[in-house]
Image (cartoon, rainbow, N blue to C red; front, side, top):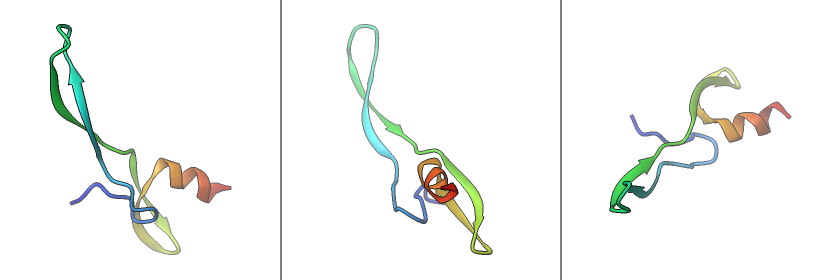
Length: 55
């Protein structure tokens, strides 16, 4: 199951996790996905798109 928004196509980003000694190790920033019915079909929608759809 991929963590990608079905409406806008946004996915996870990568970046650095920084320890107290400032050593960088890679980590993943996941997006906030919700499963909602859009037009009678269940879709994985990010919170940004939900806010736009409610307008």
